[in-house]
Image 1 (spheres, one colour):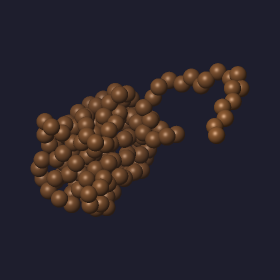
Image 2 (image 1 turned 45 degrees about the vertical axis):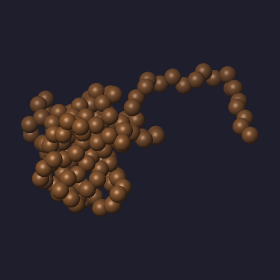
Image 3 (image 1 turned 135 degrees about the vertical axis):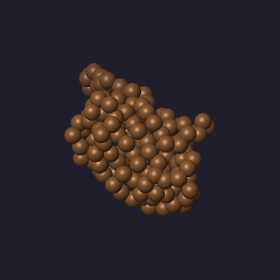
Length: 157
């Protein structure tokens, strides 16, 4: 049994924002809010880099070569970065770097971590980062559990 009460209050009006998870910060790299994949170190036309920021986990980018692999992302707006969440397969070592300059040239380490091997499932990892205001994020996949890896989703908060 569901009861609905009308208290005579107007519905909440908020600007639509893409959110990474309920009640969390907005995703600064989501394609729908203006985030961009500027560069990936491996190209596969069936699995392009834009798949990482399309908001879906059933699409992905795939590496086609040796490690390390690089992913360069432009944030939708300059912002402090507190967390990078990645959904991937076969990723072992990962480093997150940030750049605050107008052009993505000089990057500084924000975090480094390792993902546990999870056979036949997505690896999902929150990587805490502490940064000043950033314009670009570089994800370096330093090593993997197999020759190829996939990145299904990247969320930058």
